[in-house]
Length: 253
Image 1 (cartoon, rainbow, N blue to C red):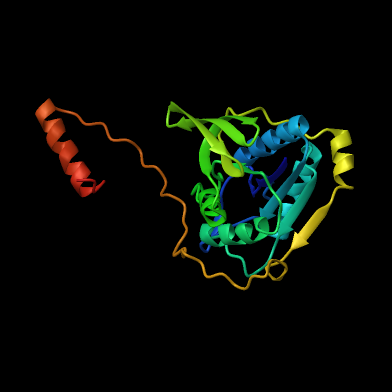
Image 2: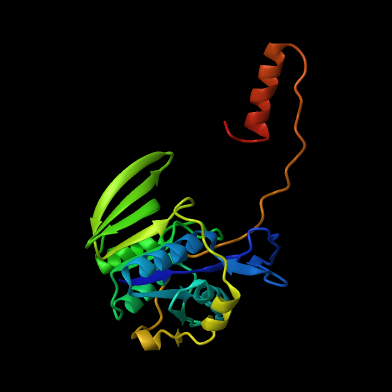
């Protein structure tokens, strides 16, 4: 059972976001594996331990993403791949094209990833990748069992439960509750140093520059929250004042 795990390095969720001239500052920032991707790594390791095979973690990002990949190796993944190139933008369409080119050169039975990344939250890369590879896809799974060449999954459907059976190869994205990710052990950290770690560029994948499907025009923090307003007087006067404020200040009606 050969498994590819899509992994992204993101800000620690406890970090404070600072923006300078429309760009997020990375000065002194701690980076981690995207929390939802940790569930995918853990699930892949459990499946590998039960059915045999290999777990390959792959990330498309800057050189610093190597740290997140090495953490996944320390957790128990077998090999890591970092695809880093200045010509690759952060656009989900571009990332999915790059991953599709990589996966097309690999032998895999299963692709796992996080439900979405906590830094952008678009949830687009995995479903685009599944379409490009022409394989089944289910998002937000909370249970995964393999029965031969069939995957039995439970999917979190916004508070409800959806049960599905899909043929392999397939792609799934992990939701909280799928498992409890392990911490890298000291022996695991030492072993990770000797595990295969490939670094690729677009040229290695036979690609050139990929035009982005979206363009960021501006980036800013939300305005500081204003103090609340207490309406006084008769009920009809409060309603009149409330409608006036919603129209003139909040501009929601």
